[in-house]
Structure formats: structure tokens, C-alpha cells
Image 1 (cartoon, rainbow, N blue to C red):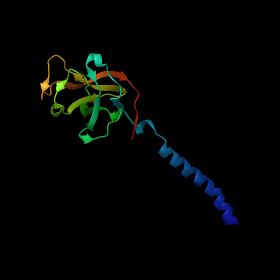
Image 2 (tube, rainbow, N blue to C red):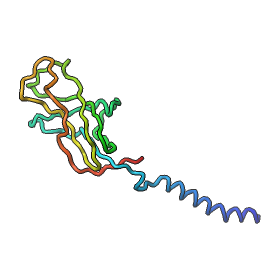
Image 3 (spheres, rainbow, N blue to C red):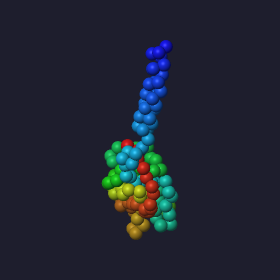
Image 4 (cartoon, rainbow, N blue to C red):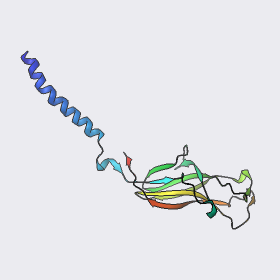
Length: 148
């Protein structure tokens, strides 16, 4: 009986220490959060300004399923995008509708909205791929956190 009561005196503090250690491992400290920014393709741009939505197919050369937002580390990131231009004056063949790469230099706590800019300064017919270019059309402050 004496052994058992001694064990109980130590078991509770040991269990408490283990619980605290486990909880500290789950809690995030400022060192566990990386600075990041967000690149977004969900916001519908102004079609009257010849801006249209894009679909992301690759991020930094890796195939992805398109998402509305990408929280990314600070630095340069490459987005491979396909345009979704539905302007009636676009007469370019489907074979010419190729993906293009947009490099975004991501800064901490910034959101970058990306789109396809339809170049209407010339008539594009046939297989000319210069009818559009991917752009960042809007930048705004946005709190971002990536847990390591």
C-alpha cells in the first residue's frame, strides 16, 4: 500500500508534465509561423476592362488542382495559367489557346489577384498566341500565415 500511495504522488505531476509538453508541441509560437502572401484567382475581374479569369494548372512547375487562393512563402513563384476569355470578338483557334507562365514576386501579407488580359489593340485570327497575357490586376493588404 505504501508503494501505491508513493506512486500516486508522482504519477499526477508526471502526467501533468507530459500533458504540458504535448500541448506546447501543438501551440504555435512566432517562430513556427512563416511570413507569406496570397495569390488569388477567384475574384472575377472587370470584363469591360478586357480582364478575364484564369485557371491555374501548375504552381512552381508542379501540377495542381486549381484553387481560389494559394498561401505561399515570400519570394518568386511561377503560375502556369489558362485563360477563360469569353469575348465574342476573340477569333483565335482552339489550337492557339495555350497556357502561359506568370511569375509573381510574393511579399508578406499581400494578396495578388491574377487574370488574363485580352489584348484588343489588334485583331487576332488563326494561331496567334499574342492575344492575351497573364497579369496581376489587383494587389491588396491581406494577413497571411503558413504554419511550418
